[in-house]
Image: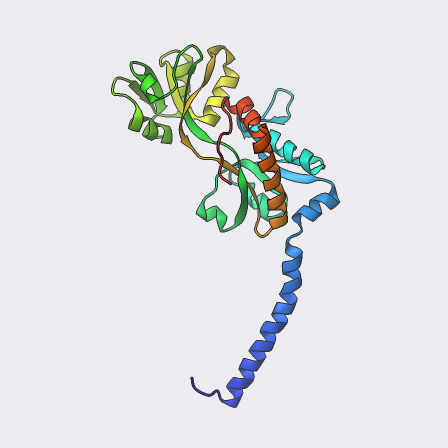
Length: 271
């Protein structure tokens, strides 16, 4: 390595001093960054972003109040922390920006975990399933793909459930493909098909609007669990919420919530 000239050595020394000064200035910021849990407890309020247009996870009831699995989970966390919950309605597009701009402390809004999102926010353990599944009237004995033999099954063309169903359906199943979810649901509601393969949110909305159908969850096609989002580096809050989720899993409370809104228990969820 070549010796540095005096001006170069002077610049290098100044750079080291600047880096040290920056480190001294940034250190308090790093120490102060992890304050979300302390802020919640001091404020005596936790702000949780939730959906209001995505039944059965989050929607507005006849009393004009938000309800659904995500709302129940938000209130559950608030109760375990011992603080009231301020529900913050969000859409799929603004739920992460609301978190980043601190309009919300947590996001509980059918949030899937992927590599792109992990670059900008952190995630807790999973709290609920999100899945594509087969649904039919309670009177039909369907427990697996083999039981679809000889039955008419409605599905939305090209959707995940179409792809998954095609892999496992017996050759004698009559799969009828429709162009969108509304047409698929209409076919099931009108009796054109005996069985419907669709996402949990579509099925939940359909069953809540048509309780006379007597439809129920039969078996899962694909699981994509939901996680709770929070800002990067908020490990105290993340670990605390993970404690609450783990206890809820052990007590069966997660299964009860999922059973109430999705017609199936939460089952095994990733940590």
